[in-house]
Length: 325
Image (tube, rainbow, N blue to C red; front, side, top):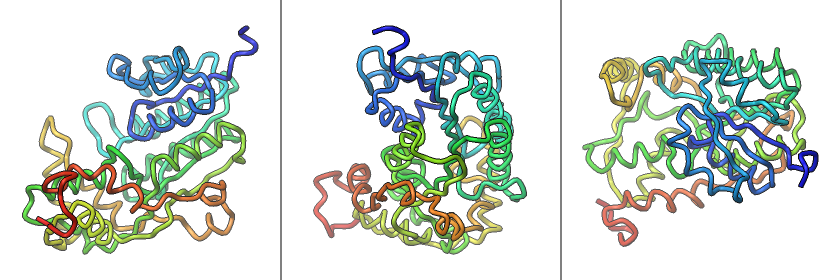
């Protein structure tokens, strides 16, 4: 096989993360060569078996250092940015990763003439009171300015093995006397299965998705309360759901964020996010810029949740249904 006949190269930033590893699998199944760009390649070797021998390689890149980003995209025909953070830690600030970092990736993709797929989030808005959402909004602006034909995907909360939502509350249910319903648990979500999101990325790289912004949600709109109730049903546990006012939750989140060397279970900025619903907008639905508009049938939450939360049941897979703890 000559260089001219090799499959196209896709550089995936954040390819070892929760979403990124599923994106890498989806692209590998399509036959692309994949360069997984991460800060710590020594910790990302587990992605290599996702493809055939030699199909996937690793590269060191840090979005805070544009030169490393430019080197990671050399020779690439496509670039996918999966990098995002839910809370700030050390030098990984929202602006550094989701604004400056997104700009660095877009600038590097433009420099080599590569197509770009950028994963953002529903609620991204430069005017948002949330630092997370505002930085996501500025990142989208940078991407659109530098690469006008980019595909920007905004998912709602993403569920699947190793997710940071259902796993977090399922783990909490093992020992906590109750589960908190921030703001009364009325915030609405439209959970999307991580493999459906990865399929959307794959179709964009295939060239089947027109440039623009897409809002991706699953088949169900659920309140925060309904999400926790479904999680508890799946893991056969009973826990009181206690309403936590936004003000008190923000105070707790601020204190938790100040504790060094641990990932905070809640931050004040996340409380700000919970004041708004996280669902696909009517405008995106009307324009067909949704998962269904991409021709992807959303995977129901109930079809996946039991498979990866089973170990949170009182006796794991051996718990008999109805014997809640």
